[in-house]
Amino acid sequence: MVNQLGTRQDTSELQDRLQQTQHYTNQLAKETNKHLKELGSIPLPSSPSEQADDNSRDEKLVSFDNQDEWGQMTTQTEEAAITEEDLELIKERETNIRQLESDIMDVNQIFKDLAVMIHDQGEMIDSIEANVENAEVHVERGTEQLQRAAYYQQKSRKKICILVMVCSIVLVILAIIIWWASK
Image (cartoon, rainbow, N blue to C red; front, side, top):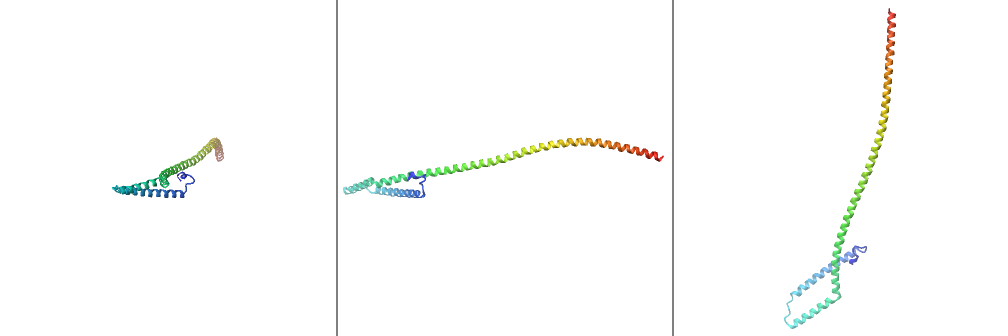
């Protein structure tokens, strides 16, 4: 029965039988203790007939001690004691295994969270890289447009200067014509 604990054969029926055996062993120990106390309280025999009765009683106790039943009860008591120790060890191991399982689950969750964070940061880094590339392209286009704007502005200044000169000359000529015509 002890060898079956902690194996696949360890069932609730086995544990119930073990508990019954332990209960029976405890009762047997209590009864034995009670009988020993009764035996100790019996006064010593003073007459030879009482001594003969005591001797026959002692022989019965010795014969009872030699019987297989007493040996079996002793073995069951030892098995029950071993079984209690084994049960405590099994419970302790089970608790340790559950704690280890819980710790492993926690570590697993931490690694999952870390993987998600790394994935998200990877996407952010990719996004930052794409934005830097876009900014570079926009800066290059902006530089080209500024160069064109400077060129067009220079051309427009020349055109405006030429236009102002042409208009000034036309006005001067018109003013001279009007002045000569009014004279």
